[in-house]
Length: 408
Image 1 (tube, helix red, strand yellow):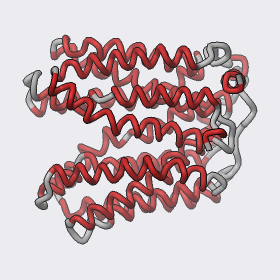
Image 2 (image 1 turned 135 degrees about the horizontal axis):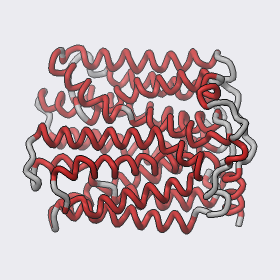
Image 3 (image 1 turned 45 degrees about the horizontal axis):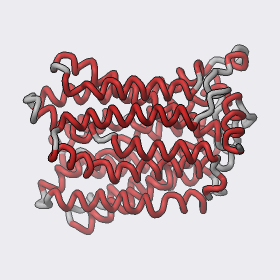
């Protein structure tokens, strides 16, 4: 399977793994704000929320920078800004944090969308699922190591050093990416090719299945991310401790690391919308397991079904959007998907928390129904015009450069 992924992508994924290992500040941000910085829960929540908005905005707009100036440049600039700001965040007064954290998160979002676009333009259609699966494997493996490492740094040194380590690590990732990503072609935008292109909204309108998919991903991400906000509260209210929740997350990470790469390879010939729709239905089925009530078996069933659904839909959906995108707009298409796929980080806590407070018995049935409707919508989208056809698959300027680097 790895032989189908260009060498440049494999090298970039090594950098993604390292960057994921050191990207632990967002996990401990709230604890740092309410602890060493002495803020109230409300103040910490507001600052964290503003930072989350910056991250989503960066994901939604980063592809525009890549299409205009080159995805390599967008990645390097985003990593440089994010790393620089994070390195000094611990020294900033609270008032400045309200601007610094959204800026760092925005730049991180640009890096995320630029990374996806670089993989999309460097892996040929037909192998993109494998390419994105390798990227997700690297990211998930790094995230498995990062949180306990961050806890060790905070315990031995201080929470402030977490930001320094994250910032310096991000800057080192930028230096590494500059070395492994070819400058020629990838650093320059194909402006001449975009001059006569139809407006972007017309390109989206010509691909109705992509629009349906993006809407479905926003809905299912709102549901998917309840595992990080309302699920631990629900378990705690029913007598389960934090250790139980930790083991559930371990199931998620372990199954993904073991199965996602083989699944992407085994299903590479399957119709993408069928795979994605099935994955979304599994997410809904997982939350349906909690409807009868709280039990250890129900919580384990939720996590297994949720994880299998994630394995099916996340990699396949990213690759499908890349296959549908025209070469000159690959970054913008990836940016839309990246933003949709992380929208739940902003939407899930307030909406899920409010519903759980007002009518806790409705949360899990609604989550199951919303994910199921999203899955059915994607399965229905198979009938739409051009749903199974690839977009412009000719090599862009960036594609040619990256493939030459992979070959040599």
